[in-house]
Image (cartoon, rainbow, N blue to C red):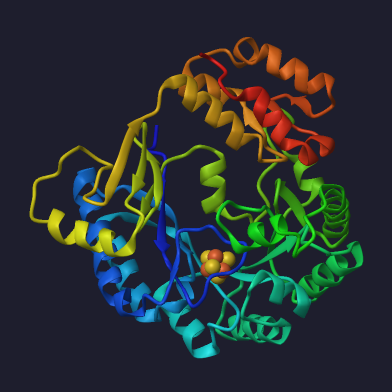
Length: 414
Ligand code: SF4
């Protein structure tokens, strides 16, 4: 069987300022470290290539953050050259980069496109100025409109917009306004995320102190349902709990062999699908996580420590086999029961494909209908899960109560 292609995630932990709701591993004010960080990332790419022992096939690369668009296009040219040297970058590989509107112009975007980036993900979040202010975002709607126009002019034909709903004080009409604006900008892909109050964020503190109303779960559910219907009417296919893409139709899904999952829409994010299918990926950069050769890996979080570890570690022999690098602070072989649970938790996020029993049998050597019998029955009785010829997937109601479904599959197989 051909080797399953790998995905690479490269973390860029820099932002101009911290947004009020964000708990990602990212830092403002570290401009002086940008160049050394790119050197370290390049070193980690080459290190992993050597550790693998052969040029692993790679079909997606994702520069996430943080704000990757803060680094100049030349940095990505270097990193992609190193990736092409160290790995077998497959023809047609998806190469995504996250960008903040307001940090990009046509020249920068043309440089990124020329470097090989072929998918752009813009953090729009909202079309309403008061919501963007509350979130602590530094851009406004005109900046989003300019960024989309610049991306198109630079030749990007695969564009995602991120939006947030369930914001404090947000009404359904406000949400409709933002989503309609996003549709007017004609992206190929939309990611819609409900606001969560993460520990240690200013937003959580404001809500706790009563300065900002708490997010309303019922209102967020209404926004989600409205968006799902609106996007379907606009020709988008929902393929994951929070993700919609153009380039697929229900007719195409029906025409596919009925014992196989419907094909992904053409503009589905293949990199994220790799995670949801529990396929292998290498996480490079400060705080990045990976999953390869049966190991979960976690890199050191602080960018300065990451740089120091790469500098010092290159001179020493490797402490562990692939996928270890000098930046790795956790390398853990996942026990089978944990890997099986994780497979279900990730796969059930895929709303059309769901969990595939042929994958469960192939990867874990167990009979899914037996191992998951009680969890499947509970979720099915609650109307949250449905059986399909190739496995199981969440129902439209289950999409709203996905955490309930996930809990049913935690710890299974122990
Ligand atoms: S720009 Fe993105 S990564 Fe940076 S602080 Fe804001 S939400 Fe977090």
